[in-house]
Amino acid sequence: QLAQKEWVLDTLRPILERHSGGEMHTFGSCENGFWMNGSDVDACLVIRRCTQRSSWLTKLNLVRCLVEREKFGTAEVVRAARVPVAKVAGKDGRELVDISVNNVAALENSRFVKALAQLDPRVPCLGRFIKHWASSRRINNRAEGTLSTYTLILQLFYYLQTRESPVLPRVADLLAVATPA
Image 1 (cartoon, rainbow, N blue to C red):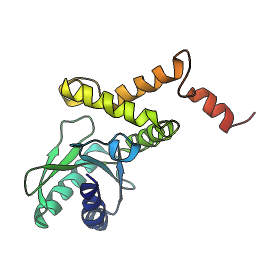
Image 2 (image 1 turned 90 degrees about the vertical axis):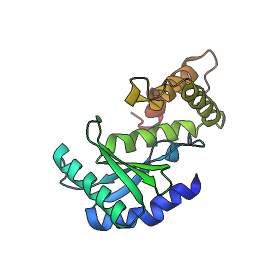
Image 3 (image 1 turned 180 degrees about the vertical axis):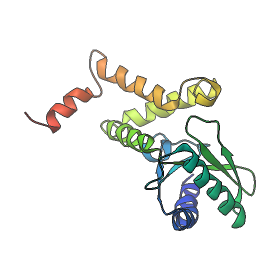
């Protein structure tokens, strides 16, 4: 898993940043503490003045062309997705990374999840268990009309915040401490 992320950051990122004019960031489970065996890497190219869906699709087609030109494997642009992505697969056909453009909300969501998960060492273990449980039942794939892993993790956080003896503090309490009146 780590080698996969390192390849994305060390090999793919420099080429994509040079040709797209953007910065590539990873997000999702590979950043927030919920990464598991079999998880792919999620990445986002943040490109200034690239605000329209048509521009995102152009950049994702550039990703596809670069992956194929450099003989890294294949890339398929999924245009119909709510957030379009280029799905990059290695030469062996194994999915390596999903790349989106200007999906800044996903970057922020990952930071939020990571911050809460780091408050108690039991949280990432429990979250990975729930993710595994949901995956084995095929109920955590938004593309198939089920809940996203992000939604399941937020539900876990809510439960851990509202139980009789809270494991996690409420976000409102964290914000109150961070911004004194």
